[in-house]
Image 1: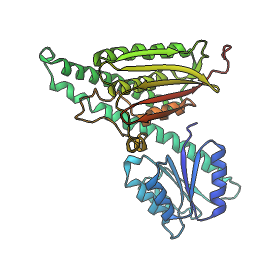
Image 2: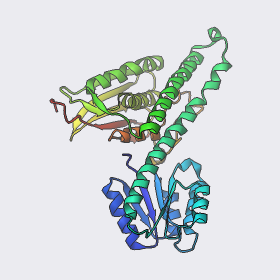
Image 3: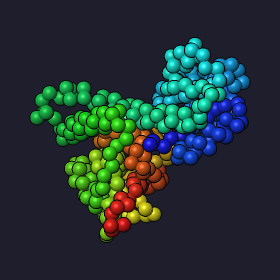
Length: 349
């Protein structure tokens, strides 16, 4: 199940508290707001995956106003669930027309509304993750048209040929994202299997080595001895790490080294990608996980994206019961860490 950051907005304290208990029990991170103004302020200040909002708070259409405010910002990709005791068909039709994901009536006899809300939140979070993948896929596909600009590749400079190589990498990334989206739409969850940690690290090194060589960056891999296997979706895990490695290469100057490491910690294997390149400011870090956000400047001369955004990479990690963390200082470099769980059946663990 996809874990989500959820905002619950309701003027009834007991409803807010009950939702918080039920959703937190499912593993979601939950914030609450007691009215329209507080909800809008939180939406403007934080990134939420799902918002559960009561229709009637300070005003009869407070929930609709929150929904409208969110849908005016399509980059948020936030799913909204309307919660109300006033479950008339006109209200339902209007909420769905405005873009609500779903609608949960209160006070229905013999119905545990909080279990219904929890189920709807899980569905909406999965839908939001799929939308994020498709959003990044659309960005990747934008590179296709550039191929036609260079019909005679024999006359291209080394830099131009390198650019075309990156476009071709984007094509491969788009195809993989399409397959991933199709799989998730069908099953809602990736199929995880045992994979040797050292094999994953070596695979990522092999996939990234050509790009590092083209940039003049050294690629070093260090894996702790006797690492246990991990439980992952192989293509997703490799794609995440290749994405992180290529980003590190992009941030590095010729002659620098990008390090790929793997260690065990508290029932997880930590795959770290470290560079000593440009690093990131606090301002950049504050927006790093937003859908569509990029640290790459059009005029920087860097190689460009590796096919998926960090938002999608983190969503993919969470689909495997893992996560991604970052430590970065402007001018000093960055370390990204993919954390994935150890395979409990691995006898070496």
